[in-house]
Amino acid sequence: MTALRLGVNVDHVATVRNARGGAVPDPVRAALMAIEAGADGITAHLREDRRHILDNDMRRLKASIGKPLNFEMAATEAMLDIALNIRPHACCLVPEKRTERTTEGGLDVVNGFKDLKPFVAELTREGIRVSMFIEPSPEALKASAELGAPVVELHTGAWCDARARGEAAKADREFSRLSAAAAQSQALGLECHAGHGLDYDAARIIAALPQIVELNIGHFLIGEAIFVGLAETVKAMRMAMNEGRASVERRL
Image (cartoon, rainbow, N blue to C red; front, side, top):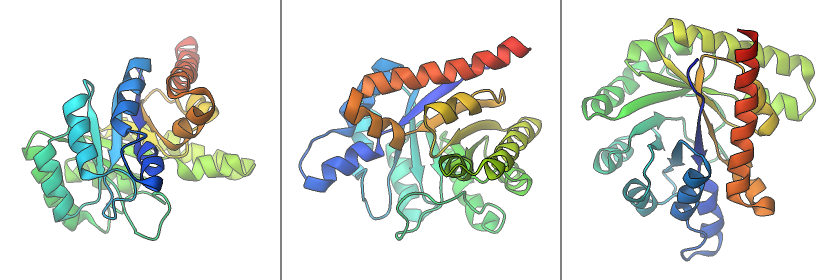
């Protein structure tokens, strides 16, 4: 079975820094600490309004870390130019609205197919691995495959929100969608990642889907780090993921 990787998103280290200005806390230091504690890669989202990660953060992350850098970006010409200049390991195309607090859903790859096609093509041509942050729907998966993206990241927010609100029936429906999408991604030849809203328990549960090979987690880890430290949160998340993946192996 494919090992399950952990990508740590350091956006909200920059959120804390930007609240006051200056240089601390430094998201690059957080990235290096997360890698030392067991992270397999680092994710950062350079938003159009620069609310957390800044351009120089992306440049420093690329220059400083020894693990893959996943550059989350909106499909705009300005972001494409930055990505091609920085040349991260991967670019994850995400929806983006200035009015949202955080990414509210998956990218509309069906209706946006024509507009997204040149971005996927250009990044791929330059050797940058492209992933599409999508809802767990058959239509979005099929469109992502037809766009030529080798990777999809399933938006787990609706499932995590239902779990947090105690809406068991809705949580079950959303998890069924995620499970079906993970299976379909494998059938389409897509590498499957997942992320958004995951905590220890949610990561343990979704790690039991064998087709998923990477979880990208940020807000929860940075929040927990306030109380117990970033290294401890990363180690605890790795343990939760390993427990979930081991439960699959015992069943096989």
